[in-house]
Length: 323
Image (cartoon, rainbow, N blue to C red):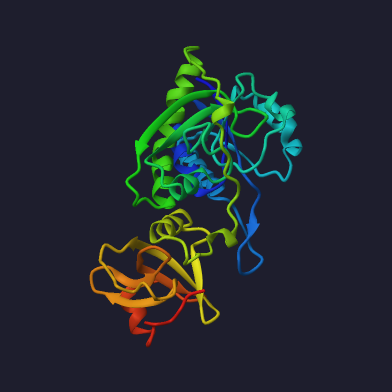
């Protein structure tokens, strides 16, 4: 049984934490997560989803007479160095923690650290590998468990799983998949590390690509682009920051869309023009190549709506031009 410090912050990292704890194959001695942040409105501090999950885990442990798992929410890792040292963890297990680990911090773990990255490394190192695969319309992607190294996502590969993409996946779909499967992937690797049967593959630096942090402006739709590329952008940037355009100066987010399969003789129409609606496909927008059919969209500060409800509340929508 290995003694684990688990590091993670967003909701995607919750299920793997729970699965490792429930397996009872290893001992989680502590959980490391980002400090609480203020809500969008108000000054109340809100803990990360991982911290909230640990509170639930500790409640269940208390019912069984078990001690609490320690929670660490430091601004700087140096603040908790001594406390982690006292726990004597064997290994660091990390998924979407959000900060770089210093060499000094990693020295606390005799067996080093492992990290789950949702791409087929060395492809798409960096902060946003799932949107990258969707934007590039990849036919295949996967998940990698790697050794934690000093350079981001450059550690030796310990395990990879692959799956096909059919061009309809949204970022949130793949996030759910990696969240559901992450725990079992970690447990497979941890078992091999414990049994000293793990094999490691050095990443090919010549094949390495990077995809950095998403910015809101990256999600702005260029209507001169093709319907296929715009559709990929919408799927890649959902749920955050959300692909958007503007009509008469008002921001409009597009949450769900497909490439129209119907033919339209509108070659002279400016890209971004609302062509009208189709009962089967939704609201139709002219693009630089093809027509985009939108099924779910949202005015700024309003609720998201399906295309039927949206049109009922937006008269004379056809003919308007997005910019």
